[in-house]
Each structure stands twice: as structure tokens, then as C-alpha cells.
Image (cartoon, rainbow, N blue to C red; front, top):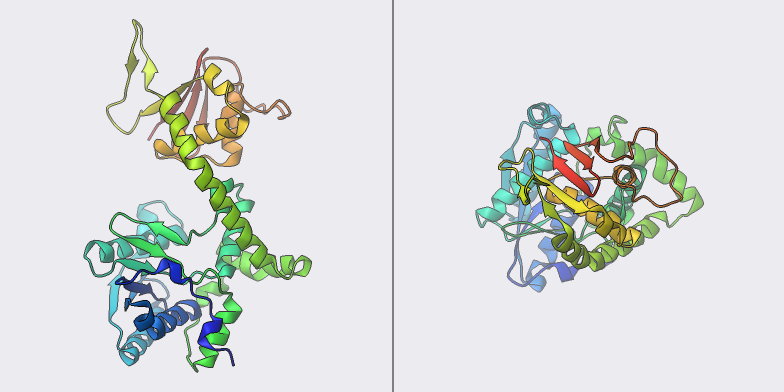
Length: 352
């Protein structure tokens, strides 16, 4: 049977004196992470607690998950922090998918633990398999390099950090580790539902890709690492260019620029000639960074449409009849963003 050391834990993410709250669902991955950190807490010099969010989904099954965690934490003598959320209601209220609402509810829960000082660090049990699935989902949706970076090992929050110390471990290694400890876990029935994109990627696409490359999970995880390194290299350069080139609001007669006084109508503009002087990779990134500053995100296809509008697309790009290319044109984009082109400027406007 495998030993604990065979489950890879990224110790570089843990700092002496950390108060670590392990996000636990009762599933195999989070149960394994809780056991592993509990076993190594003294060596690592960290305090370990558990944190569980009851999502208000799956009824009796979710209640049984919580009961399992209460028993497990009592046996380990680990404090368990529990919160409840009505995720289905939040999804309707915020026009989110159930998956998006659940993720946002968890982040709010984690932030509350960090803000209260209950924990300095939240540890989630994402594995190499989760990383590979995430990269594939991002690729299918047309993500660029920051999206292909997948799940970051560290996510900085206002009052602390969220870490993913099991990204170097596979799901198979997690199961072997639990079996070596004779530790049971809970199975989430919703993980078998084809209604969720990740479940279909996990059950259908990843096994198919493994037929072409048995190490596809590790390959995609390595791709994510490369993408994150590329983003880290570009970040300061893009910030510098945005500071130099972005103009607030729009020009007004007699000189100067009009700036919106509310989030709706807020805008950033660029001199098209100055954008044209940038190399294409920088041009793309500056436009997308401007959208992010306005609180919106541009995918690869929409970024290309903005560049077409401004006459800044690569010369080999096929014409898109849905994109106007003459001055004094506009383009409505997803997420409440509008692109406008004048004779000299490209302007991005937040419309809601």
C-alpha cells in the first residue's frame, strides 16, 4: 500500500505559523488533504482546522456529508467551521449558473474566515486531474494564456491566501493514500450528472484524450505552468503600456476629456495610431487589460472583433461581416462592454 509520502504536498505554499483551514466537502480529495495536513502539522509548524460550506443543494445527501465531516474532525481533534448558503436562490438572484453561484459562495465563506482571523490560509484540494480538466475547459471556450494557466497554486485575497497544495498529485494517488489509511470518504452524486460541463469533460473527453496520450493530465498541467509563467512575464509590461496609452473618457469640443461619474458609462480610449505601433501580442493584451480595468473580460474571439473594428487585426484575418470597420462605428460585446471607433480613437465603454 502507498505511504503518505507518495501523496505529493507542495510544502512551499505553507509558512511556519500559518493557521490553515482546509476546505472540506467530504469527498476523496479534501478528505485526503485534511488527513495529510493533520499528519504533518507539527513538522510544518502550522495549525490545521477544517471549513465546510453547506450549499443548500442535494438535501439529505448534503446533510450526511456534514455529519461525516463532524465525525471525522472529532476523531482527528480538528476544529470544524461550518456555514450555510442557499446557492440555488443566489444563482437565480445573480443570474449565475449553479456552478458559478457555488464557487462565489465558497469564496465569500473563505474570505469571511480570513477576515475574522480564524485562518490565515485556506487550503483547497484541487489535484492534477482538476488542473487538466480546467485547462481543457478553458481551451474549449477560447481562453488565452491567462486562462490556460488554469488553477493557480496561490490565490491572493484581501486578508490572506487560498492555496492548492495537491496540484502535483493525481486523483489515483489520492485514492491510494486514503486506502492506505483505511479512510472512507463521501461521493457527491452530482459529480455524475451530465448537466455540468466539468463532469462531461471528466467522464468523456479526458478518457478519450488519454487514448492518444496516457500522460495527458501531466502534459496539460505543465502547459498551465508555462502559461502562468508567460502571464507573469507580461504583467508589468502590460501595466506600463496601459498607463502610457489609456485615455479616460472621450474628447469634448474645445479640448479636454469627459469622464463618467458612475461605473455605467466609464470608459478608456486609445489613439489607434499608437496602438498600431505596438507588436500584435502587446496590442491584444493592452486591449484586454483595458476591458478588465472596466470590470469586463474579453475572450479571444471578442478581442479579435475589437481589433477588426479598429483596423488593427492581423492582415491574414478573415473579414467578419458582423463587425463594422469604418470610423464612427460601434460594437456591442458580452458582459456589458461596448467598443466604439472614431477617426482616431478606439474606446471601450462599460454600459452596465
